[in-house]
Length: 116
Length: 114
Image 1 (cartoon, rainbow over the protein chains, first blue to last red):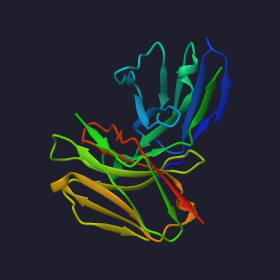
Image 2: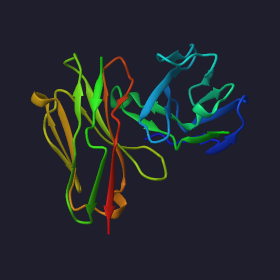
Image 3: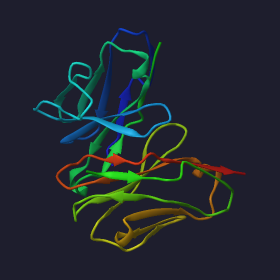
Image 4: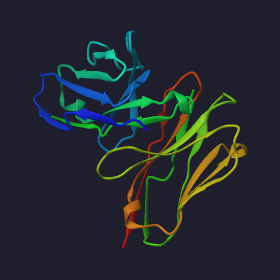
């Protein structure tokens, strides 16, 4: 499976600031996803990021708050803008490996964000 | 609409006991995929298994086994002879073809005591 890395692994940020999270994959992938996992909760999909097109956001998530870039087939960024304590979560990127069929996703190690 | 229910919030067992995690799903589609992921304390999600809706054969991988029953919309996961390293949160997830999204259950926290 693809090897996925994320930067930073964790950060503590002040409210009102923004943080950009990077996701790097060691192979070219078509579909990348960003998830949020709030403390003690399950994972919720934020958006799907395909190279060369605008990200597709899930209900409850908007581009102004979570802008996403996907400049090539191995890299994506998620920005958490104008942060509040409610944004404290683990943010995970994942990739879908198409040759194994739809839906088989592998996840990066996550970015633990704490907003004070 | 998709929905995955993991009714067990937490399970605690003593090492070497078997533990079964329940997963019940809802979907209107006849074609879909089911998954299990493990999230150890380190936080990284580890892919365990994917099954498609047309393959109801039970699967065994080492100490792990999965029981897929379409009649009851369940995809249960059993850890045999549990070990302390099995302590983690386990998530069941559902995906439909063409959608590529994973809908996760709430997760079950498994604690294996030595």
